[in-house]
Image (tube, rainbow, N blue to C red; front, side, top):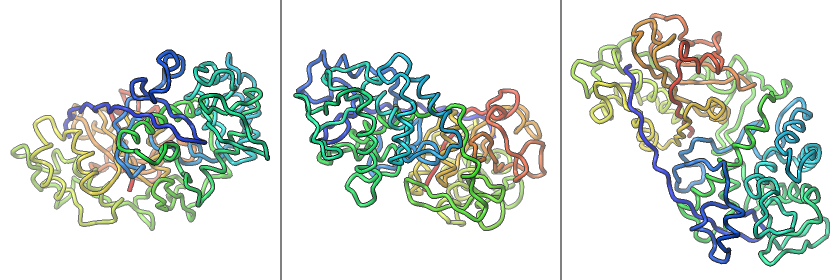
Length: 456
């Protein structure tokens, strides 16, 4: 249960591919099409909000990033399940202050509702493409803040394009309805070539199919990260519609994999400790795990130091449906390389995920991202330092646990603690205790240090 080492993520290079009738997802000047001048590149692609990432190889849902793929009731492609659209209008207006879209929050929301498109997504694309119309570059005076290229027609009108094929609108406001129509028809209509269910998938499908490779997919992840960064700002302080809260006998569907998962008996997104939606659970403090050796350090057992392998065993067994995957199997296979006197190394988690066919996402300490993973039917491992969760047995130790569910408002989390027998105060190993994000983040309480998300 000792604290573990951090690993450094490698940052992948990025590639831009241009696509007709699509968005231009821009990355690094040295990799963009050679037809653009350096001055054009400097004018357009000096973004302050790109997020370093590790490029992933297809399929598009396999990714390692500081942000998730973008799905669920708030961060998906369709209109969000919120009770007060005025809050979203106000947030858009605040975000767009000083840009050509100032005061147009109502228009973004109105057309988002009409075409069932997430307004925060549209604003995020406009920010990523042109800083909300303030960085024109090769788009010139087209008023095309969304990077839409021709040929493009809407309501029977064939729109003109400039010399770089960017669509020309009469004003920035005039582009809001057409872009919502385009996203709805091109990306949200089942059976169409670019049909997408997540922000990342939409960005991947926005590239020309020819030549898309690991580098191109990484560029799509960068575009998704930047868009989601804006979306998270626009949804700040906005809660889900209570009427949209699922009842215990309904399900949620992972937009990336299509996996359908029931909600918990407490009405939260995620997994229960018992019942029809129970995750597979192991307790390191009972036999046979208590006395099983944990290879790598002489004398260590799963009971004394195996919270890492016990946590990941629960995750893998639950998501794969394979109950033969136990803490002992994980400890024996990975302990010799990933267990030393400092405890279980953090690098064990992506390796195990790959070996068992799961998608792993490094989340840093982003609990909002963790909530999205849970909403999609996944599970999250949390690493904590000395605090409430270690005080019962080893006040100076670190610890790993599983975050198994999140309340519909995304603000409180249920845990599955592998070291919960006898029950220590604050273990969170039942449906009664839902820990707030602030509690988990507080260094004197939960003392969260790292999160990893896993999906099937």
